[in-house]
Amino acid sequence: MTTISKLARTDRPHRPLLGVSGVVLFVCLFLPAIHPCSHDETPLEYPFAWAPYFYGLALAVCAVIGPRLVRLAAHVLRVTTVLFFAGALVLFSFAPGVGSVELTVAGVLWWTLGSGVRERRLAAMTITFAVMSTAWFLFWMVMGGTLWGLWLSFAASIAIGFAGARWFHEIGEVPDEPRVPVAVARTAISGEVVGAFRSRDT
Image (cartoon, rainbow, N blue to C red):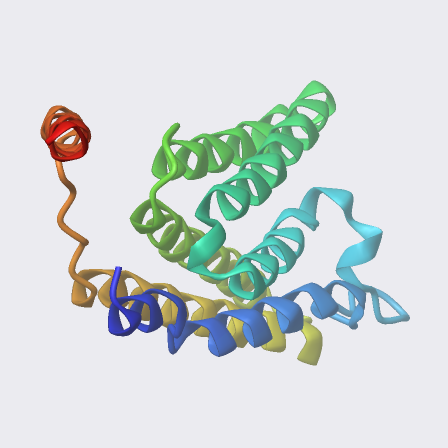
């Protein structure tokens, strides 16, 4: 792999935006989001609403990891989704309506990520998550009584969506390195070994 190709695969402009917006979204878990009664409340007081914030943290970790460790980034997102599934199942046991919605969202995210290890899948999942979390925060904003923490969460989700779209575009800009078929490679190696023995015998 050439030096230019290595730089193209590791120096991705989306990473700073994804990392910062992911951290900001996670921090919003501890910021005042709604004012239902006489005092401000944070999302930390509502476990069923934790998922977007922890996904923000997971995506920030993926941004730090970078494209060289795609497998590790995929594992981070899979673990986050499994935890999301577990929480949704618990929620479904006493609130079937909300729990079924969260199970559906978790299933869509899992399907988008897929079972393989491909960077394009990670970018697609980032976009999917951003769309869903933006819709989630917009729903609460329309309900009224929202505070600046929820608005910041909404803005961070939009930023994650832009970062995911840029990530997906960057992958298309980087051409894949041509891979030599295994059979051809083995034949070439065998030919070199045989040639080396013949030249030594002569």
